[in-house]
Image (tube, rainbow, N blue to C red; front, side, top):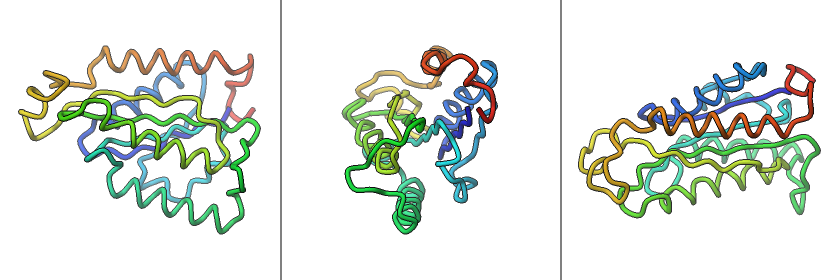
Length: 186
């Protein structure tokens, strides 16, 4: 199974989740590719069986670099003829979106639009969305946002407990693949 993990992270929260996904896959015998968004501009998602794409939340949207990446990828794939009417699912192509958020005002509701946005991007490419994961992360630089927001004190998050949940999600996802499919290139 060929796996790609692409993420953008401003403060390290999303990076920690991406690295947890990567390490869990490695520990399970998968040889994933981990790339920061800015280093993944030339990646062809169709070369992978499973693509993870991660973003933080900023004002209930993905940050500008993520939006630009998605826009450029959509234009590229549209021009190549990859995006089909009715967005048929391509056999064996699966995707997971993972979103970090602080939600100081309305909690997880601030992150859901980002997950839906990235999920729609992958669906337009024909990937089956098999995971939409939301992870609380500290609001760096503004203590009030990390201590007095709707989620209470979220300093230090994502913490080990949060990352253990991601490990559990990845392990559960791997159980859905048939035996032997975890080998690189199969």
